[in-house]
Image (cartoon, rainbow, N blue to C red):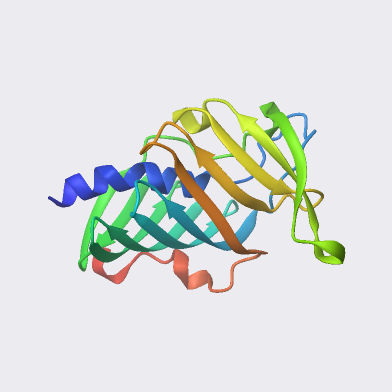
Length: 192
């Protein structure tokens, strides 16, 4: 049963890591900081929802995700630490740790190959913030997606991936540069 839940969750974790950083290419669009922290709300098949507190560190090549999930009326809290230097993910659910091999490279942000769909804004009046929405193809081998970021600072606001769960959508809140608590990247106690 745990593997079944893990298999269903894996695409969602990949959506979180989509908000990574630029692969040094043309640099023509925008890049995220090498270290950041954000809150994400992932909506999948209604009424399934996942709230994620995610920390991303390109220097350490680690991504940590505290997840609170509501799936088919069941609630759970899970944790994932993806350690790309050691090619392992520590996945903790119900106080049980699973070590899962990571067979891909550290994720990078793919906006340099994106196509601008439209420019818009969020908010009103003097408080409105300019945004750009991009179409992104073959995002991390998961299919096509649509990404909206703020102009200038390149802060992700929303990402929608059409191919998974009839269109998973990720909304981003409280995005900030840096890591508020570096111990989030320590190997979980249940995994030692």
